[in-house]
Length: 142
Image (cartoon, rainbow, N blue to C red; front, side, top):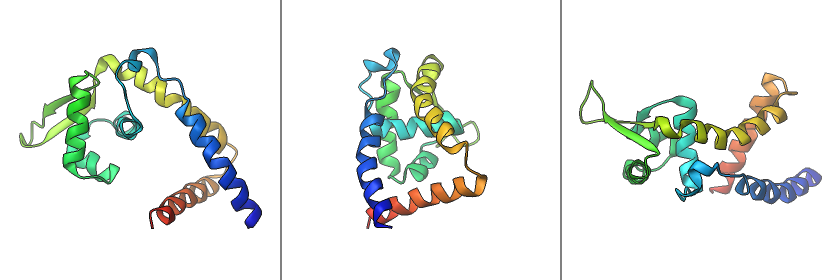
C-alpha cells in the first residue's frame, strides 16, 4: 500500500500542474476565468441549464456565492440568466450561445483524457475509481 500512496503523492501534483496548463481557448482568454468557474461551467455544459440553487447544491457552496459567480459571468457574456416561466422568483442559468463551442473545447481536453484513461476499465472498475477519488477528497476535507 505504501508504494501506491507514494506513487499517488508524486502523481497528483503533476496532474494538477498539467490541468492548470491546459490551453484556454482564445475566445475565453480575455475573460480571466478561474478554476472556480470551471466547475460551474462543467455542470452547465454537461447537465444543461439549471437554477442558481441547483448549481449551489452541486458545487456545495451557498446560493449567494453562485449568484456572485453567475453575475460576474453574465456581465462578461459567458452566461445567460432568465426567469423561470413556472416560478418567476427562480433564475435559470445557461451558457450563452456565443461561448458554447469555446467552453466545450476547454472542457473537452480533460474529458478526452478521462475517456482514454477510463476506456479499458469495466463499469465496476470505473465506479470504484471514481468512488476512491471521492473518498480521497472527503478524507482531505477532514
